[in-house]
Length: 440
Image (cartoon, rainbow, N blue to C red):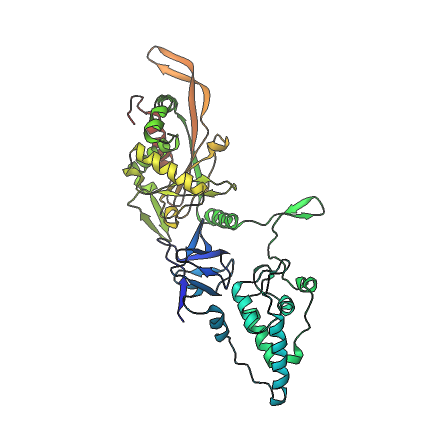
């Protein structure tokens, strides 16, 4: 009988642990190779852990919300033989034999019970029984009524392998102490209540208590930690993006027809940020205690909104090495897979600077919180059509221009006001100097 240990795989650089969020299989379920067994979460990405073998899930070693280290065993899968027999053989304790004078009575009881189980055990009411539990019940002569009476410790009060084996062990040791079968209605009372409210809970008929999601808790922790770690200051620059607005309007249809996807403003802004980081490498750093780590690669984090209102930050690796087409494809790909929860753990790791677009929600500017351990984050405000003074050789006049605010938050422990201000001004200069005749 082969027993395969399903371990938490390595999920990317610097990812050392994950949280179990959902078991897709129950003890006793058959599993095929490459079939997902459970869902896990690392930092902000949800992933599935597949099985490497065909077999039957016989033991779950971690419960929902448990934190597991990379390499730890999550579950045991039996790959050959009769699963029910194997499960009974691995019962944790030896059962003492009954006294000789009670053997006949016990055998008679078992025979009666076996007759009662000629009809297959079925899930009753809201109680679900896995194939493994049903097989053990059949082998041990446990009737439907007895099975319904066993208190379940699994999810939603389900009877697990350990529950039924414990019942079998206690029944063999002291038959007289076995509880009378309960009715399905009374057994339902013994089920543990859910640990978290599935829906908002009303308070006094008016206010509601809503449990924070796992991602919400992580974001809250990271935000508080960042504010406690970094000395946040901000610099603001108003940027004229009229040339970019007009250029994109001119080329976007041809670009979409040629490339099969839209050309948004985001890759244009990301390209300008990457260029500015090359000019100011001391913005592309992180802090480790009393040491400053100067990053060789420019990896831009791109905050993306999720359907549930939370944010995730996929990373464009080596962004300074991409042309505008490459940047556009990277932005669109990461944004689409972020919204569909298809990002890989590596794709949210290793960022050296972050850009967030608060203008998407109509904000003209913002003061974003730094994404640790980085030292800066740039917020892009909404593009607005505004009256502006235009200087020409013939004199000044008022015209309509497309403008936006760039809001730069940086860590004043290591970035002074001069560097923080010069950097965001460099981004604005790249955007304002956009060539209207540029090819894409």
